[in-house]
Image (cartoon, rainbow, N blue to C red; front, side, top):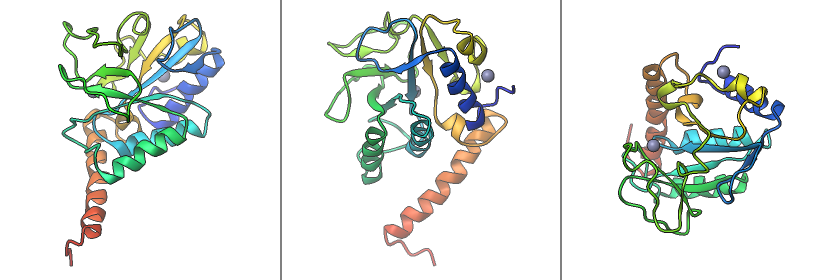
Length: 211
Ligand SMILES: [Zn+2]
Ligand SMILES: [Zn+2]
């Protein structure tokens, strides 16, 4: 099995979790044995998030999507983001806040759970009021992340199917699986290509003359 960062292998990861008997759960209760907390930090692209959400919904998989209000790359207040928020909920997923330290401002769009964007070690586990920090114990005790298309402890598909984790929080960044590319750079260039097409459509809808 090739551990590529693409939807084919994401499908295999989800299947491995099922084989291991894991349940897809949320951050709304203390995790127990067999719980798989599927977490998506959406750093760059709401379109990638929605594509992954559809992919999961077709497989009866639910996840928590952490969205930013201060992203350099998307605007959560835009009309298109509003429909993404609605569609994520309709597919059974939950929505947390992907916060930029030290600001944690919740509103009605979010459940009471947050993750820090690019956290430093000293505030990684810092709590805020009564909100759940995903890296706080017990949620962060068993944890794997795909950051920059790199698994620090190896791709977890074998351990999932062998049920080697008592429970697991699995952090998956949608952009790096949804867009094609052999390297992080290639994947990001694919994302920018898709973004360019989307922006051109938006310009036409905004009555900009591109003739
Ligand atoms: Zn793998
Ligand atoms: Zn992030």
